[in-house]
Image (cartoon, rainbow, N blue to C red):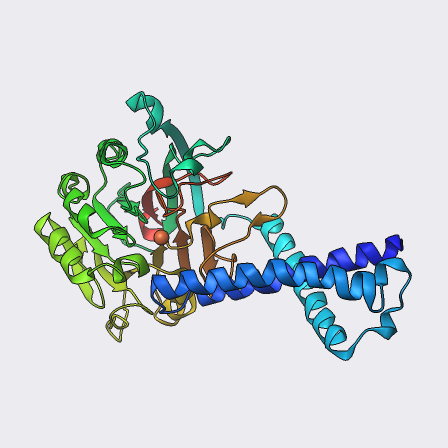
Length: 390
Ligand SMILES: [Fe+2]
């Protein structure tokens, strides 16, 4: 046995898995129906396992038998090419780990207070229904019921009265699939309403089962705020009669911001609120050409539009979609995120070219599994960074 070659081969195998994961993440960011995505995922999963086995048997044990003192230069040209790709995959994986470990919250975020509420304990039972994935709820360490209710203070260029602030409640990715029952969402909404924001935003992925649209009046429909409740939809909603979901939300008191810009006044500020559901639905919202002193907020289901938001001088962009990866490995970080940027914006706060983007981990998902990645509801307190208002 050649131990050096075994280690090198294992590094290349990691690269092979990274290539497949990269492909899965990018394909899931595109406008492809859920059914097709699941088929694609099965094919890639099969590819990951089968290539691993073939790789160990053929170049590993047989031709040229790298694990038993075979030489790398005796490899067939196809294997040489694939191993070169795997080496790049391994480097990409290493880069991703370094990026995860050096990530720092931008200084524009001044404070962060979190209270974790275990919804299961409050209900005295696990609010899970029997179904395809319900067994996952029993995995040790699973945090699906440990909901974080967080308050973050952002200092942004907004004209406010002295000591004034705008409070925003951000909800995203509720995923009514039927795995978590209605009582879970009712309890979360009860706590969310107690956060008493000025305005409430929902940034998509509500419905994974058309029959559960009937939950909307009992859950999101119970919320209210002085400046109103605004929503956009996400890729999962796109799969399940989105027009009917829009109507039900509107009937429950919510305002649809999809593909449009809504303007209103708050203190001394003209607020512009845009909604973006691309690549799945609608168009880019048209902000007015001259930003002047307006404060611009963008609700975008996917964080993939961060660059576009910067080009539009958006001050605050709110997103969900990536669920924080749902499983966050120690040191390595998250692995899966349905984004063109992979796990780069899995969750967190990011500042680039004057645009602050907050990507939430959301509340749920089709798979009731969250490890080291709690569900979250966030209230932002926007305070002014303008000198005259400090
Ligand atoms: Fe989602």
